[in-house]
Structure formats: C-alpha cells, structure tokens
Amino acid sequence: MKLTVLCDNNTYIDQYYLGEPALCFYIEDENRRLLLDTGYSDVFIKNASLMNIDLNQLTDIVISHGHNDHTRGLKFLLPVLKKEMLFTCHPQCFNQKYDGNEYIGAPFSKEQLSSFVNYRETANPVCITSRLVYLGQIPRKTDFEAKNPIGSEVVDGKPQPDYLLDDSALVYKSEKGLFVITGCSHSGICNIIEYAKSVCDDDRIIGCIGGFHIFDDETQIQSTLDYFCRNNIQKLYPCHCVSLKAKCEFMKSLNVEEVGVGLKIEVL
Image (cartoon, rainbow, N blue to C red; front, side, top):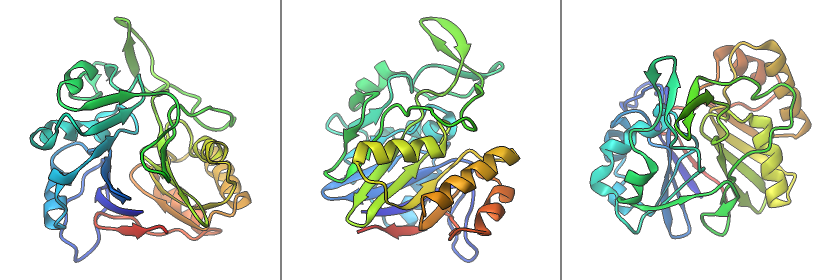
C-alpha cells in the first residue's frame, strides 16, 4: 500500500503545496486508487496535480465521516466522478449536520451522490482490497473518548445531538501487522484501533496516521498515550486535529513522525 497526503493543516518548508484545516489521503493498493476524504476545497486537487497524481484514474472514494472539512471537496471533484467509481461511507454520513446555525455537513445528499457514483453505505466492515478494510461503525468502549456530541444532525427530519456515529476509518493488513488510517477519530482513536484488531484478528499495530481528535484534555492525552505504549505502536503520524500539546506528550515515549502535505508512506 502506498499513501500520499494530499491535504492537511500542515505543509513542509521548501515544498510548495497548499494546506488547509482539512484532510485528504490518496491511497494505492492492488488495482485500486482511492481517496480517503476530500478536504474542504479544491486544495487536494491542486496538490494532486503538482504531484502528478491523476485523479481521473480514481476507482474509489471512502469518507471517514460527514463533516465539511472531509467532504466539501466533493463538489470540486464532480468532473471526475463516474458511475463505476465505488463510494463507501457510513449510513449516517450524509445526514445534515450543524454547529448551532452553521451548516457543517457534506455538500450533497446521499440521493444526489447516488446519481454520480456507485454509492455504498454500510455500518459493517467491508474490504476495499484483499488487505485494505473499511471498518464501518466503531464500537465505543473506552471511558475517555467520544463522550460528547459535536453539534447536531438531522434524523428523520428532526435535529438531535450528533455523536458522530458515522465516524470510521481504514486499516491495512500487512504481513508485519496493522496500519490504521483515520480521518478525525471522533469515535476515539483507541476504540478504532481496538476494533481494527478485532476485525482483522491481529493485535500487532505497526502504525497509525490521521486525525486523533485530541486537544487539551489531560485525561484523554495521558490515557491515549498509555494505550499507545501498551500496544507498542511502532510509528505514529498524528495530523489534522491533534494539538501540539498532545504531540509533545506522545513524543516523550513514542516514535512520532511529522505529517504534512506531500508525505508519502509505503507499507508492505
């Protein structure tokens, strides 16, 4: 599997790509070429062009959850969407989402998307390739993650607190262990890793990249660090929605890599 960061909050010095507070990963595995999320604007498209990545060759799009910093780029991607392209997400991903009166959901409904692509929604794990798995709905078992709603979502025409049940992730099954790929980890990065271990029947975690949704909560930071250490995670690539404070704490005990637009990772 090869992964390239097309969009992130961070950019590297002397590499002149564009950044924004959003996320998009380009992934190649077997005969599939896919995006995990699409950022907020057309930044990921401009960066892909600079990297000589042809988005016309995409076979799949996977959406980690329905917030606009992961889905709004879809409207800029319309020219390359086609009916044979497989689009995978959770059934609640395209519910309307609000933060107060501000709309923070996706730019399209599931009905609209179904006219553009081969739309697949599932709460269960499904294989993208023989080794790359979309996890579906993540069971929430920790006592320090995913406890509070973020805004509201509209369900059957009525607003209700949004606990981001649509938040999911990918996991790659390598010969040496599992590599976890997240969007924002609203469901909890430790919950995600535990579920990946269960789905793949493998307790070895060789790495993890993505947003962990960890900011200044001391209990969450320390509990997450303890979990990472217990699981002997070899490499961490925290990005997008991870505070500097959390990264600094992780770096005291773990191998933490800097993430920015243009980062390339290959997992065998």
